[in-house]
Image (cartoon, rainbow, N blue to C red; front, side, top):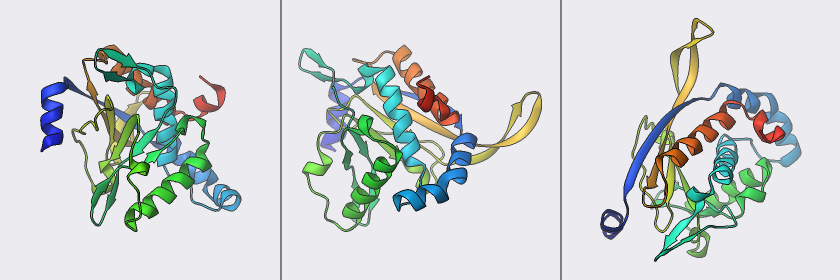
Length: 217
């Protein structure tokens, strides 16, 4: 309750949604999951792709990774991504530190390690502190749309949702495509609508065409 009161009294919260196609990211995983497992000893999931997309979005729109501190705006040098993890005892939010310096395998390994600690009840307070941006995946529970709640003092949070095959018009033809909604809740005191739209558009561009990461486009 105190968390919600703090947000209500101190933040100006706005919400933005966007849909994205998952076709190419799913194909990438399908093509390389066996080679990835053989080389790195762990499965290639989808979260590493979204973390990389979020990192790219934050690098393009650094104001979303910033924070208000009194009368000052502090821009963070590092991208420390909080990942919401559901456990038998409730939701915890461990932090992937310096995610901007990690590759896909390092991100997958860190997510796996933190999730195991969280489910075993071994996650520490320090491992949940200091995040600069949060990703919450309600889609694993079947959520189609949601309004994610910011984790202060962070300035924004991204919500992921269920993947659903929907009819889409592609090159004049109606085809079925795996689609999901993403939602951004942000503090309008710091972040303007333009930056929020550009941030979600960057995530959409990277998820729909992961080759952009390789070519820095």
